[in-house]
Length: 142
Image 1 (cartoon, rainbow, N blue to C red):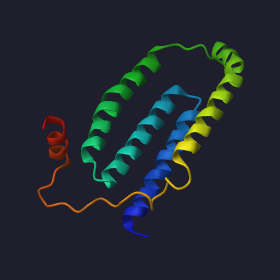
Image 2 (cartoon, helix red, strand yellow):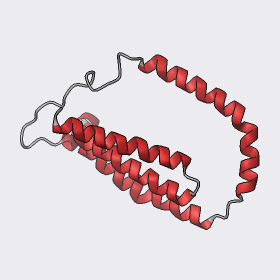
Image 3 (spheres, one colour):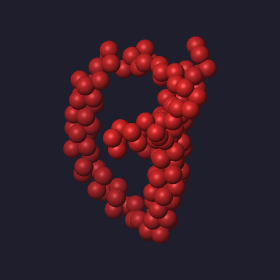
Image 4 (cartoon, rainbow, N blue to C red):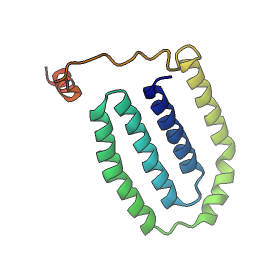
């Protein structure tokens, strides 16, 4: 196992763990912090895939602006949790049906043979002056 694969598994573990912690967190402010951690984990995986521009954009745009805005809005609002819990029970059957449909669609699209590290090609070697921002600009503007 190479060092890149070890880093990929570590960042993937943190991404999945922080995403699950965000979903199951009872405190909205902690959920936002777990979402920020998941964004950092995703950005780290993008850096491993040599997509530095996407990683920096994710950190600057989502963590720097959107998550800070969410955090302020959550702290400013006074949400009544008892009414939310009462409404949640009514929508649970519909939510489970929609979740089952989404899982079935994802299973059909992804399948077992299209998912895994052996399917993804390793990044190509580039010259020392290579910049993925330059390649992105060439694709967009020429």
